[in-house]
Length: 242
Image 1 (cartoon, rainbow, N blue to C red):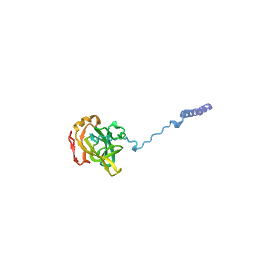
Image 2: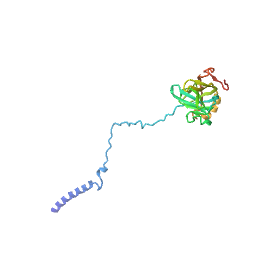
Image 3: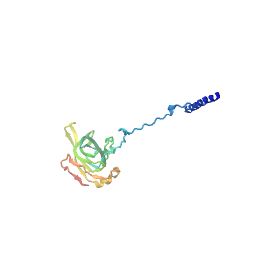
Image 4: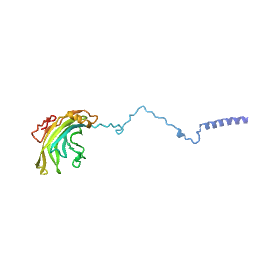
């Protein structure tokens, strides 16, 4: 009887120890390390905000146009260089010099300037707009002889505008009084614009960008010149000079 009672007490004790050993984690394993947090799902989706710095930057293609033409200087204008002062009509502060000179005169011609071309056929890249040539100048010794004129031309975005052959002849030296300095050198000149587009298109082929091959006729417009015997609307035909 006593043996039966002992067996009845031992069996539950062994069963409890076995259950305890099955529920105990293996030695060296941290329970917190194997715990996985359940994801929290919200019924509302917030839009993702993109800052201005994250937006893709699209580079804008610069807008510009070209004028193309030819210079023909005679008489006193066969100088080391001829300088034109050009201003944009809608922005008088946008003013610059345009030099035509030979690279053989590098000691005289300001080749450091951006807008310098050789005599003859030329191209000039500018922002679209209407421009005026207001002065023409040549070097005389250590100073500059400058005269007034008004010659208009137009630049169209993405286009090549043929402005004609600018024919300028310096006819006589002179001395101008007044201003600073009191005595200044000057010159008389005659100016005309010749339409030689047929010849110019062929000559300019290798000077034009590949994406701007077409040429439109938009000739220089003579508004005012120093010599009163040239009509303001004077546009000469090819091969004719005054």
